[in-house]
Length: 353
Image (cartoon, rainbow, N blue to C red):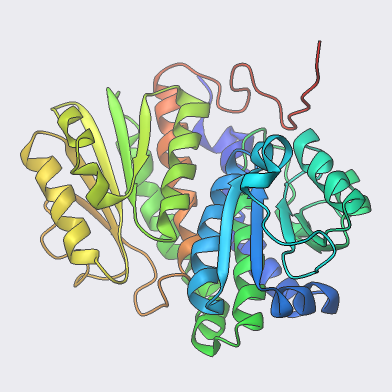
């Protein structure tokens, strides 16, 4: 049986702290063209596919609050197939840049969107881990997280590092000194993520019938990424919900043998913990990941603390590593090979027959 520490996916996820630090440094030296474009934009579209789309959701939620402007997240396929439902300004206005996220910079939809936007005269910003990628060669300006590049099929440190990179740029553009200062402290809190990951490894030794991950605001994208990691590597049925939305119907799935994870922090933490506790009363096992004991008050199951005292958005890159621990533990327990998840490759290239 493969040992946990022998997994490429685990080894790369375990270096996310260093990749986050490097990405924040890259954000402080972001190309002037990218900063100016975002600073002058009236509306911003952030897009990606798979994990990159969930990353876009978290970034868009933070950017709306920091910039005070319309920032929307949408899948790459929507920009390609239904652009009229995504883009609202005139192509040459320069007021609606499109931020395209792709770890490899080779995903077919990402390159297609960049090409279509270029041909339509729209401004684009690529976010990738590979500066020499096709996406970088087509986009107007590129933000690169070199330390986030990886060999694993599923995204690990690339997600955390590109998230940190974009959050750092957003904080700079929005002149949010509080967020910028707390982002700079995030790498120093990496051991809190490691401690939470140890809880995830232990929980991953149980063959849960279902896992539900709850996250509100910017944490919803992180919850969705947790769900994707669990689905990709272990194939356990997984869903992600806004915490209070879980109460409107989906809570009916709660029963013994399932796990509910709550990613709580900031405004509404008390109400979100209450939803997790209701799931516990209905028989589910629970794991709350909060910033501090005050936010976790009332939680009766597993509790992990990440980012106490930090801006809620500054801790987001630290919330991904525990997901890998849970997902990889479940995969190994189920006899799956998480370094070679079935039906998947590192880069998705779509074509027509």
